Length: 221
Image (tube, rainbow, N blue to C red; front, top):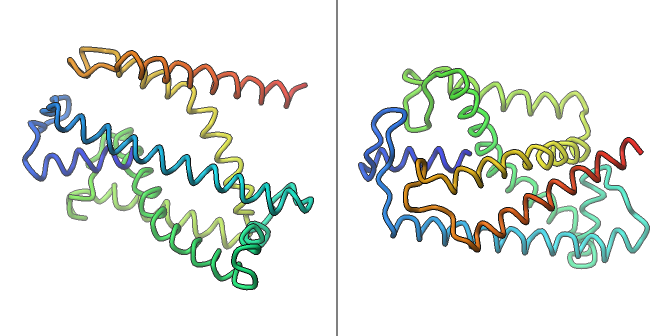
């Protein structure tokens, strides 16, 4: 959501789009669609590769030694010990700080965009503070809440775990909506989803739905 909102802002600022008011369609051509498709494909390839190696590394280190639950960042850092030895904690700390500096603006910005659109107030990082006070105030509040959660002792690992569950559950209806939108010519014009994309998308929807149902089934069993 954050990336999509940012790209729309860039289109407007660079005068590459006909978007001037809410509800107007941007000008899209084959070249832009191809660039967006390549960008999405590369992002999915590398993100899934990283996910695979995280699973592989933790299975070969933590799981192999009987550590089945990660309760703290210190435990997670042990996965790097075979590679980094005594520097595992330092390496993990550097990674956590780096990803934090990258993700905090993204997550806070995403929340600000979502809340601003829901409330109908002005939003956009391209706007000055005086032009979008509510938007920037939401970013500040979201960041402050994140800091307070850490100060009051909320377990970060458990928070990430439960947040992932919520994301997985919400992904099911969102995938359905995206598929329907991608096939609607009133929305995307001639750039509707290809047959291969439809098959992959509906397959993903089925697997995600089944996963959510199995999860709830195991909880209430």
